[in-house]
Image 1 (cartoon, rainbow, N blue to C red):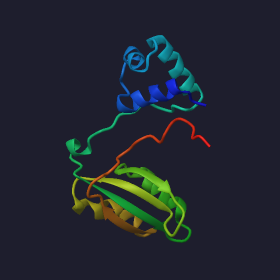
Image 2 (image 1 turned 45 degrees about the horizontal axis):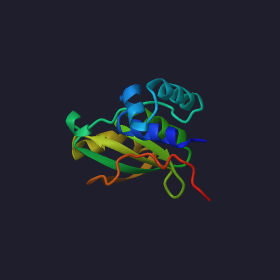
Image 3 (image 1 turned 180 degrees about the vertical axis):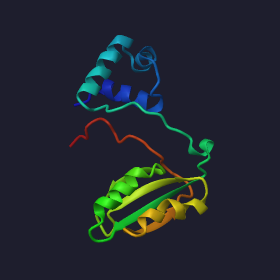
Image 4 (image 1 turned 30 degrees about the vertical axis):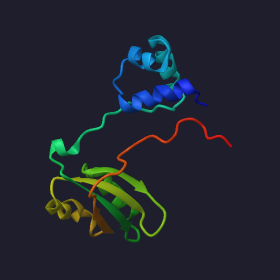
Length: 149
């Protein structure tokens, strides 16, 4: 279970994963070494898996993103998974319930390359693509303290 200090530390890291232990400590009201000890416990317990970085895709030339719903044809589920895993333009992919098996997000330089990226899937799956116009929430953590009943 997380306490309020653990939640506060996670909150600081969500906004700046490179913050020093001393800076985090100042923001949450404990010493840097105490922050370090709490982070060690949070990592060992599996609450924190990794520390990351958010990249502005547009600065790297990826001007568009697309959401792709993917429905493998009978007998091709594993092949479709392998194609998705090998194509580095997929930013993430979730296996889902419902008519489609996967929902994935692609990074695109322009819309013209969409056919080239998805071409390898067409013999093994049906795809339905939507271009992302804007993101209301790009990524955030859920509430980290347990819900009260």
